Amino acid sequence: MTPSVGATLGPWTIESVSAEHMKTLAVILDDPNPIHLDAEAVKALGMGERVINQGPANLGYVMNLLSEALPGARIASVRVRFLANVLGGDRVSAGAEVLASHEQDGERRLDCAIWLEVDGRGRALEGTASLVLGQDVDAAGGSTAIVS
Image 1 (cartoon, rainbow, N blue to C red):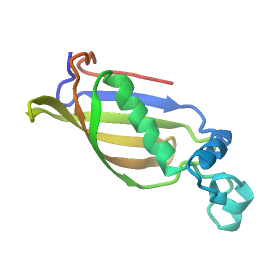
Image 2 (cartoon, helix red, strand yellow):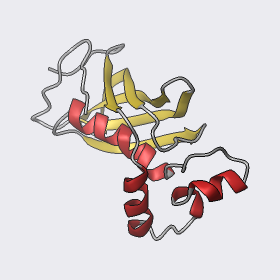
Image 3 (spheres, rainbow, N blue to C red):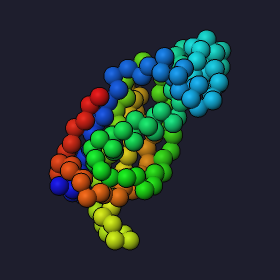
Image 4 (tube, rainbow, N blue to C red):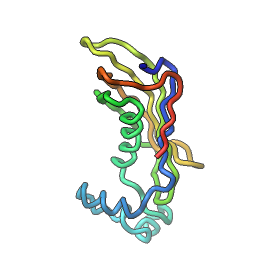
């Protein structure tokens, strides 16, 4: 069943963002920026005392939510604003709300508001995503909860 307009998806939660995973992602992204690797570098820049997660990882948490909440759907477009840093050890939760359901180019689509919340500090990113629903999409109407 396709979720109805107004339905929420999520949350998809990371209990503690891993500083070790940031090191691995820095290698994959070829991103040697010390803010992702060394808390002392972050402190020297006056940006706090914990390493800062890469923006693509933060967006990835939202993509995980969408792919788990709507299996078989493909993401046609995403537009986000990065609002705040996610730090090592933060608890984050991705969420979405279905804004519209419509046909476009012969395909069933859902347009969603998307976000990533940092516990105690508010949103780290927010935006919109448009998804093309596959034949095998089986998401619950109303609210879907996914926690990892």
